Length: 103
Image (cartoon, rainbow, N blue to C red; front, side, top):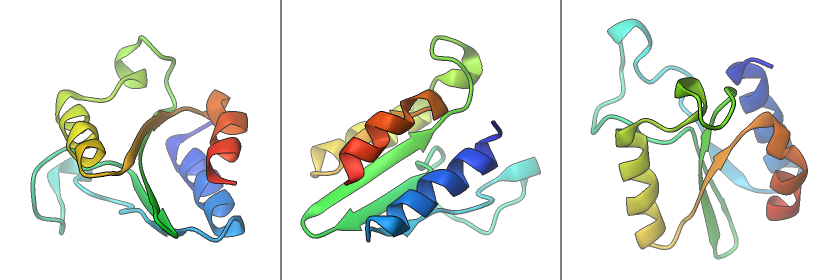
């Protein structure tokens, strides 16, 4: 599964369960970006009622370079967790657990 397909799937489920969700489709591909700020911002922010989720999506296997957040992504996840977000790193194999979390 590609990261785009996985992102679309997660966003579809977030909409199904009535979350407000934000995702930047291209935040620096090929060195070009219209997004400003610190590097490593997470893939999805989602809010429903008093909960908010900060999710970094990975399609590689855990423990591999492509399956782990970069150091700057870890900084964002930790910072958002400190201010009340639920920080997650999600992979396609996590979909059943993701659905439990966002139900």
